[in-house]
Length: 90
Image (cartoon, rainbow, N blue to C red; front, side, top):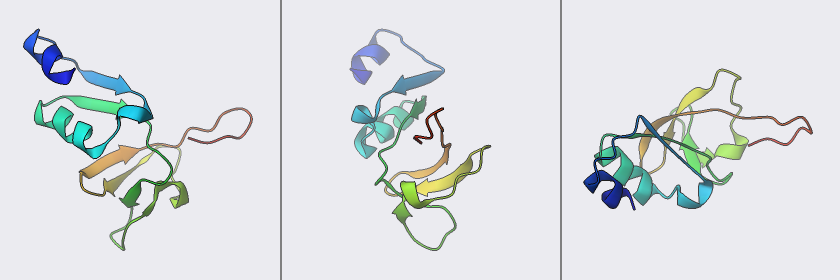
């Protein structure tokens, strides 16, 4: 789908997609095209927030302004935590 979009001249500022499509392979393919992305990550994705080792992203304290972490097998990304009215977080 990404290749077809590129062939048709699609040149997005950002690509937005659901967790279902956020595999490392897809993220790398988007980066290779020079496109930026915005998605949700599953709570067990491994990140290194402070250069001390990988932990599940659900265990990281993320400030309201977000923070930069290293996503395992991908590289540095900026993450945010959203809190809904009922207290659920994503």
